[in-house]
Image (cartoon, rainbow, N blue to C red):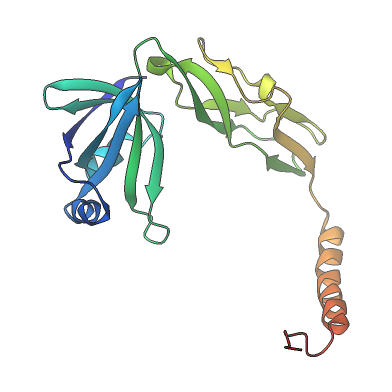
Length: 211
C-alpha cells in the first residue's frame, strides 16, 4: 500500500468550541498518538483527508506536521449522526516494519448457483499485516457454490505477509435455497393473521396507572 501525504497543523486550543470553529472553516480536528508519544492535537483540510481515505480507512498516511513526517493509520472516525460529516479523527502512529491488526473488506465476485439465496455474514475480516503492506480488500469468488455450501474465513486466500486474526471457522458466505413463490405467498398471508392475534390478545388500558 502506497503512502498518502497529508498536511496537518498543530492545534493551539482544544475543546468543543474550537473544534466547531475548525469544522466550519473546512478543517477536521484530529489527535495523533501511539508508541508512548504525547498525544498531538492536529487539524487538516477536510477535503484532503476525504481524498486520502476514499479507498478505505486503512490508507497509510504520511502526516506532515511542519518539517516532521509521521506514519499513521486511521484508528477511529467520529461522524455527526445526522449530517454524517466527520467531526473528529483518531490517528495511530506506526513504524515501518511494524505489524498491526486491521479490518479489511471482503469483496464478493462471481455468482452462486441459480435459485439460491446468498447470505453475506461477514463483510470484513481482521488480519495482521505490516503497516506498509496492508491489503485494501480480499476477494471471495462465488462461482461454483451451490445450495448448502459456505465459505469460512480460513477459506480466504490472503495476500503474502498477512495473517488471519478472525476465527478461522467464522462463516463469511452461506448459500441457502431461495424461497419458492408459494412459500413467499404463504408468509405474506400469515403475517396479517399473526398481527391480528397479537392485537386481540392485548388487554385494554395497558398504560401505567398510579396506585
